[in-house]
Image (tube, rainbow, N blue to C red; front, side):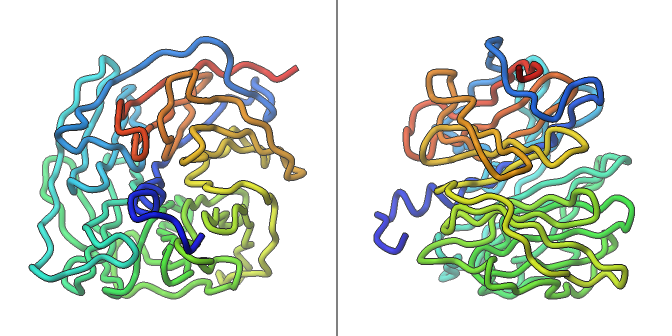
Length: 321
């Protein structure tokens, strides 16, 4: 999409808001949002509270990244927002690739409450993977090139590794949760941008790394071989222009995807077919990411184009009949 206006291009990137949609085994993998929709929180647009990515906490709270004010925040079940950390302002003259301004993207949480998130600034001293332990202060554990745009982030809990989707360099990076020098795990052509942003959302699932590509409107699956290397890329869904982040609905390959600029959430079936299941009439505004706990789907909206009501919404999930 090389001819997008600057505002649209900026909004499209800031759409990687994560989610952990984990439906119980009793709910079929073809579950879709039902009619019960409620707002968990209406966020402060004047204060830059536009949620980009999301991870769930055991007590019912949600942790989000606010992409452009460089903050990580917790949203309680009652909708109260508490800022956990503000990342450093980049040096004067730094220009973040594709976006110009600093960008705080994907976030994941380990069982001990440690948060990991990715930050892009266009400067070598700040761009990379950051960690925040409970009660601590954030610090960078892995540096990425200043030319990178780390966007999506996922955690392989069994292997204790982080995978990062780089939207500008068309790369999946891998780094241990302990930090260190990242590995270019995959640079497959399917990850490349086509005018603006390529690899965007990312999840580990059933022995593979899955990645969405915003420009190409695709979701691809990259197997993790027995040696830990990237296997042959398989395109699992197409025709999803402006796809941002996504989340699996359970143990199968059905997933929900945030279609940012179109104000939609799509259900993508294992055969690649997809259906719109939430729209702006449900209250979402440029959804960036989503997550499911039990029978509740959480959808984060950045309102990047509507400039009205960034919010966190919860929708009941029922079996699809």
